Amino acid sequence: MGEIVDAQHQQTMPLLTPYKMGKFNLSHRLVMPPMTRQRSWNNIPQPHAAVYYSQRATKGGLIITEATVISEAARGYQDTPGIWSKEQVEAWKPIVDAVHAKGGFIFCQIWHVGRASTFEYQPNGQAPISSTSNVLKPQLQANAEEPAKFSPPRRLRTDEIPLVVNEYRLAARNAMEAGKYFK
Image (cartoon, rainbow, N blue to C red; front, side, top):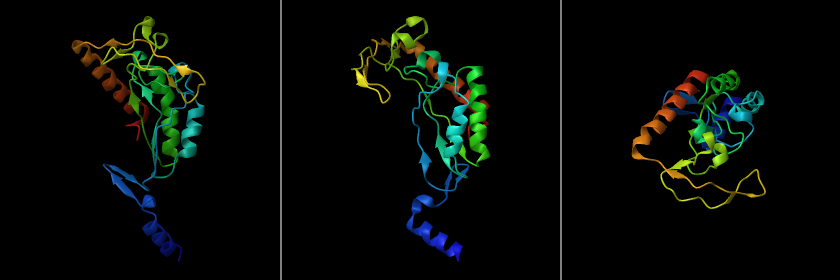
């Protein structure tokens, strides 16, 4: 009787039906999207993140991590996690393992903030890099009362593009090392 009710429920609730996403067999179509938490001190994911993500994991469910910066120069917000150093990779491992222990999948969202940064977040206080030298207008951030002000960016030269591409490549490899494809 319970199986008939479940089948009827799935027919009226397509979000609860299984979905094959490449090699991943999801048990439902609900995905936890990235939600910036800003709780990674010194850009290192903290142990409490394993609790946070595992509490939201479901068997066959998909979680996409909060935005995770690819390099020191990719930073633009306080206390966001990174994936460019060995220490960060090691910190991600128990988080990924906690989600896997619940039968869930977890993907790492890697990013570079570009001009949405300030001198204080950049190595040696340099200008943030971007595709433009135009400054972003101040914006109210979710975790602040005062508008965030951004430093004037430096337009990335064409010959520097491969350096940023390589930072993405390294971040992707680090994510794979942290979680066996962070799946």
